[in-house]
Length: 240
Figure 1 (cartoon, rainbow, N blue to C red):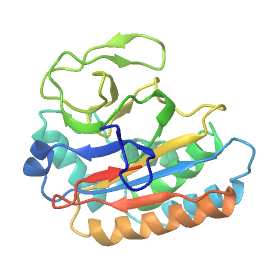
Figure 2 (tube, rainbow, N blue to C red):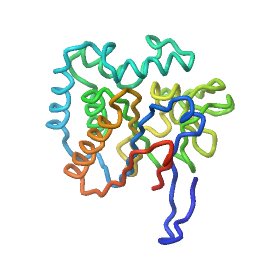
Figure 3 (cartoon, one colour):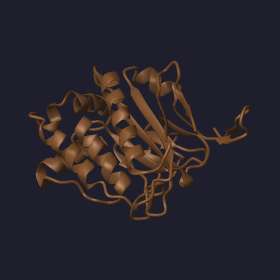
């Protein structure tokens, strides 16, 4: 929710997962990071090359990775065919395996995509300027709206897992499968929320390593001071 800090008077925004998501996916380990000042005027070529090299060293195909298998099981539980709807990290790994490179879109997105394939963990980046109020990962009611990258409006089906804001706008569909064009990063973006989520057995340790890597890269590339937190069912909210 949007509120005011009693100690500082600053406006805060909240990111969280609903109680239903924690109940149905108790292995979930989410990481959230908020950072301001991440403009397009930096080069991430060296960083992207390094993380792509780490991804290339994996001997197994993406379908055999425990990180991806956990998301496939989650998609099956959501009633989705896991080979039709893939989590974002699996889609990126498949493209990287076939093409030997990732698309270059924006320094921040390029960095996060490279980190995603290195850890085989989905990483989403939202332009906070286009998110209204609390952003919650929850089951859809069927009344939310979703803006595609081509400008079309869709309505996620009831019970689909979405990233929903206070105005009923879905900023991602099918959980980690498809992000909305509404809050996508663009050259004018400066204020972002980054979310990484994992479900596999060693998720906690791997997400901690991902969080450290991403924090170190951001502070080395931009003059920024990110705020971040690894969430849990006992402490599910991230205020920023």
